[in-house]
Image 1: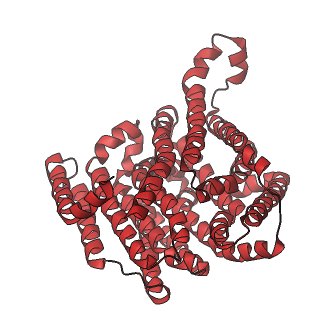
Image 2: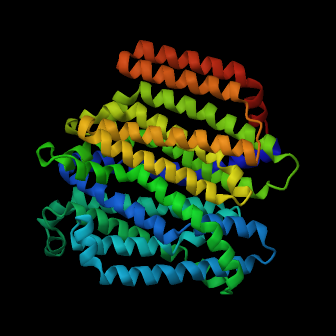
Image 3: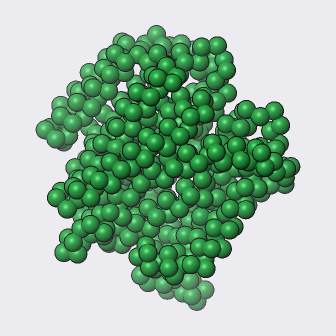
Length: 484
C-alpha cells in the first residue's frame, strides 16, 4: 500500500501541474468566446490542431523512449545526453527547413504566413524542453515540474488578459501602447502569448542544459529510435483522433454552413470534456514512471490491475458530475450563447476521453514488454476509424459526426489493447467491478443528458445513488489509501 501512496502523491502533484494550469486556462475560453467571433475562435482552433500534429513530429516518441532507457540502462548519463542531443539536432533541422518552406506550409494548411511564423517558434521552443521535463519526471521531481508548468500557463494567460482586456484602453492613453495595439489582431495576440510563455519556460529549464554530460551513444540512440518510432506513429494517430476533426469540419462542410463557425462551436463545447482529460492526463503522468520502475517487482500485474480500478472509479464520478452540471458549467466557461449549439457533443466527448484514459492504463503491457509497435497498430486503427467516420458523417450530421467518430475510435482502441494485452502480458483486471462502474456511469449520463437535461432533481439523485454504491463498494480501499 505504501507504493500506492507514493503513486497517488506523485499523481496529485502532477495533477496540480496539469489540472491547475488547465483550470487557469479555462479563463481563456470565457475570454475568447467573449471577445472573438465564433469563426475567429474556430480559426484559432484549426491553427492549434495543426500545431498539435507538428508538435508530435518534433517529439517523435523520444520522451517515452527516454523513460524506458533511463530505467533500463546502467549508464543514465549516456541516455540523457543521447536523447538531449537528438532532440536539439532534429528540432533545429526541422525548424530551418520549415522556415524556408513557410509559404508552401501556409498554402497547404490554409493558414496565413504570419501565423505560421509564430507556430514554428512555439514548436521549436517547446521541443527543447521535452527532455528536461522528462528528466524531472524520471527523477521524481514533481514539485519543480509543477511550478514550471504552472508558470508557463500563468504567463500565457496573463498576456492574453493584457492583450484583450487592457491594451485597447492603454492605447488611448499613451503612445507606447498605441504602437503595440492593433485592431483585428486577435489570432496574432494568442500566438504571441504562446511564444513568450514557451521562451520563458525554456529559460527556466536552462539549468538542465548546464548540468548534463553531452555524451552521444549511437548504439543507444538507434535502440531508442526503434523504440520511439511506433510511439511517434501512435502519437500522430492519437492527434488525428483528437484534433484532426476540426480540420475535417473546416474542409468537409459547404461554405454555406460557415465551417469556421461550426469549428468554433464544436471546439468551445469540447472544452467541457477537459475535466476528464485533465484527470486522465494527471493520472497518466503519475503512473507512467511507476509502470517502468515496478516492472521487475514481484507480481506487478496485480498492482497494475488495481490501478485501473482506481482510475475507473474516479473517472466514473467525474463523468457523471460534469454531465449533470454541464449546463451550469457552460455559462461559466462558454460566455456567448452562439457557441452553445454544439452542447449535444458533451457526454459523447466525455465518454470518449474516459475511454482514452482507460486505454492509457491498459497500454502498460506493450510499453514494459517493448512491444510499442502494438501501440502504433492500435492507434492507427483508431485514426482510420476517425477519418472514415468523419468523412462519412460530417456531411450528414456535421459536428455530431465528429463526436461519434472520436468515441468510436477510442472505444475500439480500448477493446484492441485489452485483447492483445491478455495474449502477451495477462493482467488480472476485475472486469465485473470495472464493467459495473462503467455501465452505470455511462447509462446514467446518457439518460440524464438526453432525456432529463437540466432536471437537477433527477441528475443529483443519480449522482447520489452512484456515489453511495462507490462508497460501500470501495470504503475499505479508500480508508487504507487515506491512512497516514
